Amino acid sequence: MLPIVAFVGVQALLAGLIHYYLWRRLVRDTTHRGRLRRIGAIVALAFALLVPVTVLGTQMGLYWLAWPGYLWLAVMFYLLVVLVLLEVPMAVARLVLRRRSAVAEPTTAAPEPALVGAAGPADPPAAAAVDQPDHDRDRRLLLARGAAIFAGLTAVGVTGYGVRNALGPPRLDRVRIPLAKLPRRMDGLRIATVSDIHLGPLRGRAHTERIVSMINRLDADLVAVVGDLVDGSVAELGRAAEPLRDLRSRYGSFFVTGNHEYYSGVEEWVREVDRLGLRVLQNVRQEIRTPGGILDLAGVNDVTADGTGLAAPADYAAALGDRDPSRPVVLLAHQPVAVEEAAKYGVDLQLSGHTHGGQMVPFNLAVGLAQPVVSGLGEVDGTKVYVTNGAGFWGPPVRVGADPQISLVELRSA
Image (cartoon, rainbow, N blue to C red; front, side, top):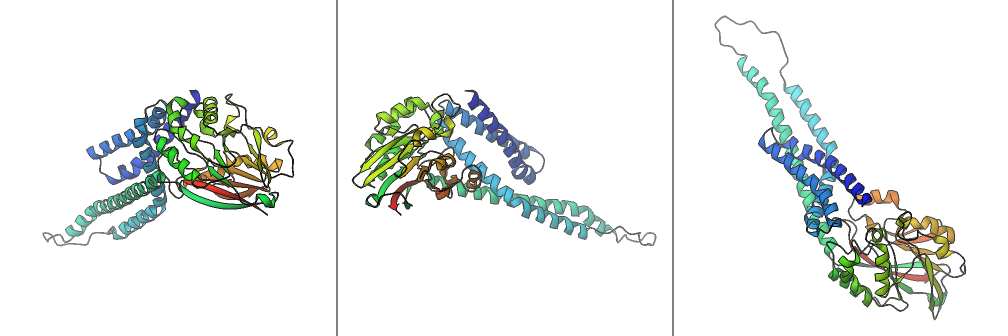
């Protein structure tokens, strides 16, 4: 419970800082002092509290919070991105207005002599000087309101597009990967790969059924589910996961744990997934015998397991050591970063997920700081690593620039 409370605390702090910035740009800069600004402050505070309340509430089973809370999280994210991008042009525009104001202000000069009793010709310029600050303030207010409207429309539009993508059917991608050790007679072995299904508050049984149906139409030789199946307990989501028992493949279906299994009762889920007919590869490897030869399929626990006490940490020596080095080996590991250890054991190909392809551009840039490959095929220290985008989503039901994905990996002999 303590890690969850700490996580929610960090979320609350970040949410507070972000919403303070949004309040400054969307409320303070666009309104005069008074009732409207006070209402805006109250609304900003309510939305700031909604973020940690949603994260904590969904952990406690209050799933009705998920839709409003996570949708606002997406809108908030894109409001922040657009407003930050507008900071430089807005600063330039304010500077231009300030300089124009300075040029327009009348210079102070000695009063011209005037006849006693004559009409004062200086009255109109004096009035203009008094009106100038109000005119400048109105122009700055108009500029801030224009930026706020643009940011709001953009954030809502991008979020709407992302919701449509996230809730739509996963995209099927086919990728051919040559392996030097793959026997010629095994050329064309196909592995249907899916990750990050994320059954939970916003996705249920129908989501699993659609994924299973798509995979079964591929008639694959192997099925690999590379972690983050669930965001909840077996009691809550067991029925939603049941369609996995219908997965079909020539040589079997396999599963490795992701980090979210360790938040959801990993030991129960390992037993449940095994009961549904998927072989759970926990730091072990399996010989895949085909008429054309033998492939070693290995799997390691997610790196999150280290230190949790819930399951053994990732053990690459147990999964990959003491094997026939002439055989090709494919490793299932939830996080792409596992390739840094896998490469030491001469792994030919690693299949991973975890990144969601970034899920929401430009968040993919941050993901790239922690993972060697964010999406697609890469290579690290001689080991190929293929990262699928995942078929679901975590948090906001939004995908922008990274469609949900099921991958058909076809192995080719080099």
